[in-house]
Length: 629
Image (tube, rainbow, N blue to C red; front, side):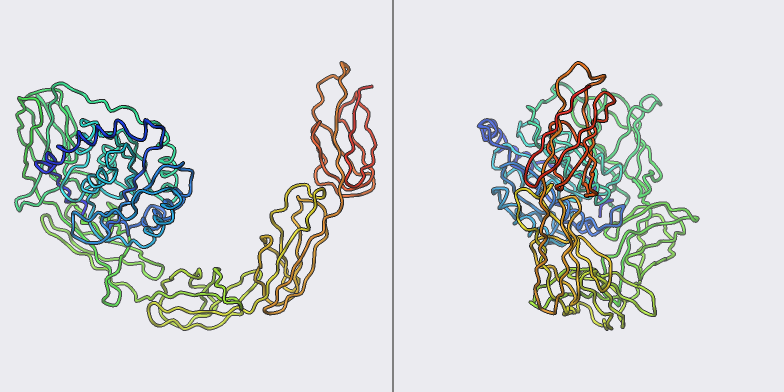
């Protein structure tokens, strides 16, 4: 419940923990970094329930994170040791739910284990950021390192992680935290950015799947920057810590302003340590932060600050409306989707199914689209100080999976469609569960090489798997070896169905499944000169299509040294005199280029130099020297 993060200072537990920090810091000053080794990297991964939510591009946060993290781990991370810790993944209510799943190990070993761990995680619980960071410090064992913290929300266990980072900095712990904030509000962004700044790391935003990948790419570059020594500001400071709760003791994230002699001196909030210029009799105006980023009914309180250090003030605030949502399909709870709240026809705020959103009283319309079969709308009245649950009853749907099998038992991944009454209703990708309404459909899969004859499919119960056997043979496309007769290394070709027309890219030297029939393999036009190869393929049969390149020779153009050029020559053109095809007729001096045997004209493209006719012979280089008149 992100809006209930009324943070408290760590207190006696933190003080007892800090007693161990000097020893860790001393070890950190001597460790691997001084010996030239790369700093360790520990990934702290948010698996709280809110990671089921959607990003701006409608992708699920946990899915976008899984993909981006896989790409990040596949990038060049040097030989640094990597570890993986998840939090909020096992228990809905536990503020100590943080687990080191993959201990520090070499990159190649860690990548595989982390990918398996992330694939198996399903978001579930709270967001105990501070506890997880403290555990991460122990994981690093006093060795200088970096932490990659991925989170889609602020701390939900009433402890301020930014304050923890200040304590680390003052103790010279030597650990940087790089934060990726996933779909955060402005207030949440401020709080998470504080973690990065106080630790000497950096903050990155991720509001879409592409942003997520870009953010992790930025982290990859940032961790390569050497860590700077920690600097601690000393001297007298004045700070205000604010706690807000209503008459029933319910705490809130609140924001407001601080005035001195009637003039505003600072924007303040419960989410941060509010630093002041000095002592004085201040007026505090503060109220709960609502989901629409406004403040609810601010209250006023006089605050007297006379001594340096931290002054804590508790303020009783008025209670706004509270709203949550539930999604039910046939009596079963569903994850749902982002909820949009409208008042007087205008969108006022959004919240996720896992959130308790704070709002102004009023008659709202709440809308959500959890899938293509459910565009839902519910009207509800919100009352100050009361909780309202918006219930979305979804049209019943089930999930099913299609698996396509070749004659040799190999499973292949491909796209499919479900049709009914001449209309395409769903797109399906084999191997992935797809949610649809129960019923009878026509399954179509128009893969160019191995199309499926449309067939009926009846989907009734949740979790069904349909295994579809494909009538197919195989084509293997190869380029015959040659040291001379390719312009560049062949890496692809085209495969065309003679019976159906059309063609598509084809990989080399691997069996390509195709429906029985006639096929034409076409070479890629930029690799050389060769004829297409036609083959006939039967069911279960493997046929090779091998391209035989035509023999080539080479031309090298040179310009003789001379003062007779109007301008330094830097190019020439080559024209075929016997109709032979040319891949590229534009040439640079000194660079060899391949041509079919035959007669050619080399045009210097200079008025003061005459063209030259030459004969290209197979597997021979012909050098043409052009001279001014």
